[in-house]
Length: 113
Length: 116
Image (cartoon, rainbow over all chains, first blue to last red; front, side, top):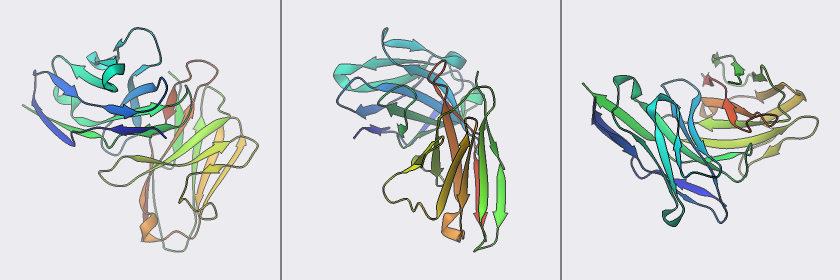
């Protein structure tokens, strides 16, 4: 069975600083990887996905993520965070496109003025 | 992008009553939908996979008689929490993959259930 680990429960970053959220997965084959963002009391919004091809993927809101098979990682980055980026971020893995997802524990991002 | 509508957004009920939550795909057909549960400050845990025209598939440890799932059409799945108790209080979220196009899962806005 697949699993996802997000090592950082909380991250505090200053507005304008860079952000990197870590995600490690466990799955025997090529995974389908996703990053979602959740604002308090809301559903999930897809930031970006990786199915195949270029290992550096661009998403919405200025986010990007890099798939590294050798490290079983799919870390999310943003060069300069905005106060509106404060939210909960979830990494998820699926065994096929459109299939059920296994989520990591989430990382809560706080943005300091 | 595709839209998944979930209703109601919040419900408060008395212990012992049943609550129905609806999940609709508004601009695509969804033969499969997924129901997740999220406790405060925790991640999403898959409860069940809803299949149009057939029985739902439940994850281990989820009581199928307590969490009734009906997927009667290609755009609607419902989750009924029967005889709800305070421990059922949680945030329930549905999702549906747009298999006809992007194969991306789209999520509803969630339902906050509070059982008194």
